[in-house]
Image 1: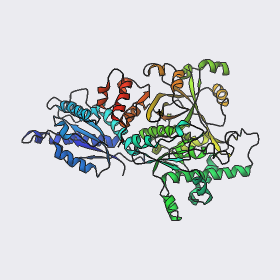
Image 2 (image 1 turned 90 degrees about the horizontal axis):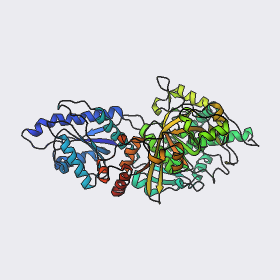
Image 3 (image 1 turned 30 degrees about the horizontal axis):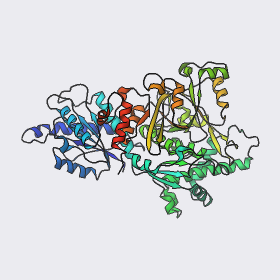
Image 4 (image 1 turned 120 degrees about the vertical axis):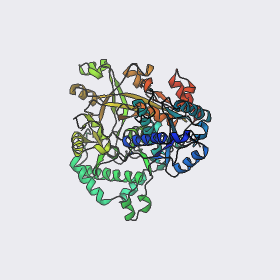
Length: 588
């Protein structure tokens, strides 16, 4: 059962006239909220989000308890209290410390819903149970059942982010291997995963992949299907090695990486087919919502690298057609994996894993190519490139009904989209200088200008997570610029050129593109389609992860009402103070 949103219709408990006159209006608010959330939001598998309404309106502590008892059987991860009137704040509020909370107070004049909202917010703040306030800008008539645009935006953002938080809870992050090449994000901090995300950290040695391949613990029929699809849809690309692999060795590598893909997926998610092969323990999987593969160097110095597996698993399709991405972080960088997870859960799209490799100033571009960049690229751009888990969706070749290029929600992918993407990707034999064991790296360039958000979770001083956000666009450079710049790094890897939005919001970190690169907290970043910075800020507040860098306008920031008690002039500082005061969501 996916997590649900519980809706709590709050009412003035005074009977003999007042309560009776409000029953229908109060319950209608709950039904309206339920209909909106269920019609607009989806779970990661594409099914509509589910909401449950309390068995009755809540006028006091006894009914609040009955509501909590009911919600405890319904896997409720967040509660939305709704009311058109005055009610008794601390007697009706949600006291469950594990639910994410919001209160919608109707802006009307006949009954003071706004007064209850204010009283409830004061009680939540005082009790250490932060809640989001939802209150329309304009006064409505008491019989007006429409949802104003500003209220609609807050309801949907609260619901979208609360469900994302709920979906993570009680899942696992599976480290396949350990620390890759001393990368900080590869050091898995189990306390962070447990206390901030509600995720169990697990470790699986890389030899488990080899054991399953050698003992043939995978679906043999699916392997045949996957291998044929790979041979038909994954053409070999440029081989940069002085001594290329023989055709026989190349075929062995292809067979190995396809099997490896099946095995890693099964380790994470399980596979009922294995139970029928008498591999019952292996069939169960690890209940993973996220994984990471170390690869370098103990694996890649003698076995094919994980690039094919990472790219295919992170994409919205494979040999079985369209599918939900199975998130797998290159080099076991779990912090970038969490960033990928945030982006995926908020959009239901693939996330692009990349090195934040190089800032190209317009002067350097002109010196190297003889051409001055124009348009969005005129102020310079960042080269996003990595040999590993770049989702193939980042080619930007899927199209909507108007022919516009984008990265789609996975359930909207068509065979035409899949064909266009696979036609644009070739698979270069791995650079044996990096990967002595061989393998294949996806090779493509992002071919569409798209709104994108780059993000990264970092940990400061061993314990404090922070989130960085940079909204911007992918850019398509002229071929004569792209080719010269791309080949200076590695012509066998996928490339995306990214321009963050600078000036305006964001302070000194966003005064220009160079400043974004200079302030980025790690060597990796995750990039998701759309400008989703405001959703990320709301989700981070729910999890009590402060945002250390972003370029989202202040008017788009939506955090729990209690955050204003920590200051209203310096919102970034108030966020840090609030998160420190409340501590992680699952602190125990």
